[in-house]
Image (spheres, rainbow, N blue to C red):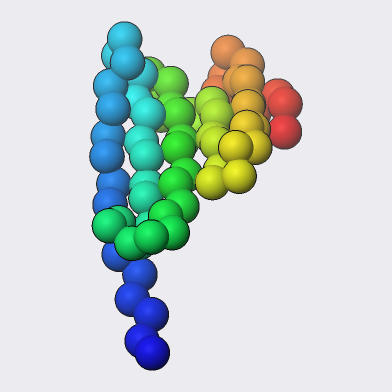
Length: 68
């Protein structure tokens, strides 16, 4: 049996910010998604993995990550 990974990237724009969703195995019986959110200057401010775990980050005025 051959396993082929197919990925689909869907960019979503919400009030000027970018949220991108990547789905593996599109159309298969088992799919996994990863959603990543970015602010207006390109900093990654959050992500949600396929298990539903959410990670959030904040940045200071110099765009340095302040929470890991």
